[in-house]
Length: 304
Image (tube, rainbow, N blue to C red; front, side, top):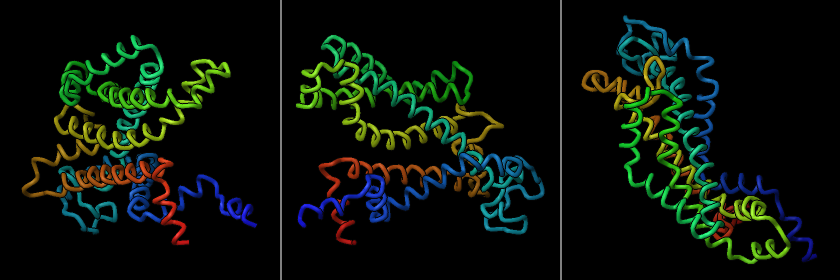
């Protein structure tokens, strides 16, 4: 009887994570909001691109919560009479695209370099680490400003610049984790059984350090999104007619005295998205750590 009890309580990993997320209402709210942002980024431009670019000079700087022009103007209109709600939804695609592209590229390159730096020879590790130190010696935002000033501001250049500045984060984290993991017994056992170095790195070590890197990527997504918004606010990010949340804040800055909503709503979208990412990353740090996961699972079981 006692042997069958653990088997009956065993649940698939996906269901256990969903149960833990359901128990943490703050993390659940953050996840729902991020899903909503992703859906807006994927489908918003398809449905609302025309409304985001349609001008109505009679309704310029229309205050929020004025429904005389329709529900799209619930957040007001900009200096050319365009719907702020539609523009925020359409701008989410470029904002998310730049942030996701930069994080994905920097995570892949930094993790691979960190694998070789941590598992390879001491000389290889030192050489790769010095490369990361060189990149980190330049302030990331200043480096992005210099490069984008020389190159033409575009989505591709913005992704490349932001990705380069974030590579050392994953490189140093992966190297530090791998230097400890490679001394564990399962790695030594894989060597004794004749596993190749590539198999050990990518099949045995990488799954162990992946949860830590995934948590960092969630936090880094918020940082990159803020960096993109800062560059767009300075006028060297994505250029009109393309729009991002940071560019909308920059365009609304001259109207802060008489039309505060032009900069407030896109700024609020940036704040809520970064806050949700930070909250969700804190939950993921606990949920993906087998040593701390019991805190969430224990609460879930006590509820059940």
